[in-house]
Each structure stands twice: as C-alpha cells, then as structure tokens.
Amino acid sequence: MLPTLLVLPAQVFEPGDTLPPGQVPASLALRAPAPTADSAIHTSPVRAGLLQRSYLHGEAWASESLPLNVAVKLGIPHIYLVLGVAAGPFDHQSGAAWGVGVGTAGRPRGRFTPSLDLLLWLLSNDNDKKAPASQLTQLRPMVAWQLKQGSRWQLVGGPTLNLATAHREPGPPHWELGQDQWRWLDADFPQSLLRLWPGVQLGVRF
Image 1 (tube, helix red, strand yellow):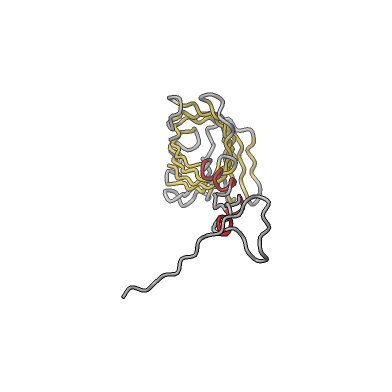
Image 2: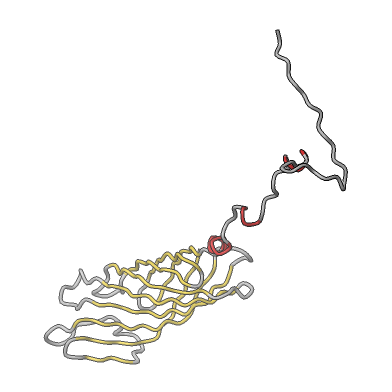
C-alpha cells in the first residue's frame, strides 16, 4: 500500500492582513537574499592593471664601445630589469661582457616610445692577462620607433654616456678600453683608472 501524504492548503495573505507570531508568507520564506557587491569574487584592479601592463622585450644593438649587444628586459614599463651579454671591444679584450641594469619606459607618443637604461658591464680580459679587469657603466637614453603601428618590432637609437673603470696594475697602464674614443675624462689614479666618453647606439627591439 502506498503511504498517504498529508497536504495542507497554503494560506493566502492579502495586503493589510495580520500574520500570527513567528509566521511569514511562504513566498517570502523561500526567497534567497540577493547577492551583494562584497560577496562577488573579482580580480583586484591593481593586479589586473599589472597583468595588462607587463613589460617583456628583447633588444639587439651595436655601439662604439661594445660592437654587439643582446639584452632581455622584464618587469613593468615604469621599472624593469635588464640582463645582457655582449661581445667585447675589438682589441685585447675581445672576450664576452656580461651586463645587468634597470630601466624605465615612457608613454608611447604615436609610433615613438622614449626609454632610459642604466647598465653595468663586466668585461673579461681572457686574451690579455696583463690588461686590468674593467667595468663599463652605460647611461642609455633611447627613442624607439615602431616599424608598423602596433608592432613589437621597433628601431631604437640614441646617445650613450660611458664610464669605464679598472684596477690599476703596477707599472705603465696597459688599458685600451675607450682609448680611441672622444674622452671627456682620462684619469690615472694610484689604485684605479677612469675614463668617460660619449657614444651612440643603434639596434632593434622586439
């Protein structure tokens, strides 16, 4: 035999009726509360902005100080890290050079984008043990020009300011880094050597 279910008719309340204590209309009791803005799960605007404005580019360029340079830039446009490798000057220090630095990029103006990098290069001197180990600090203001509107491929160029330092070895200095450049400063201290000169750079960004 099938069990008998007791079904009671729902009581209908009209506007203005008084409800018994502790009782609410069924239409109100079954209604779920509407979600609020605080309960919604959403991505932080700051995080979303960082994801949209992430900065990741590669660059290859040539200059009078280091003939061939390749670098990777990663971060955000306002501040990014630069990691690079370069071929040493075509002289006794023709080994590799390793670079690290920071940079910042300005807002694009049409197809032009300004940027500024500060790099420190460590130059090896494996081919000439008598040459002092050198460091080259470069200030690189640049302007990039998009080859095509919205393209990642850009021509980059601009001046450089080069500051070379080396440990002073006993005897006459044997240091060719920056020797053939237009030197603004060429100092020979008891413990160190110092040279300062301007330069130029030209390459591509992708």
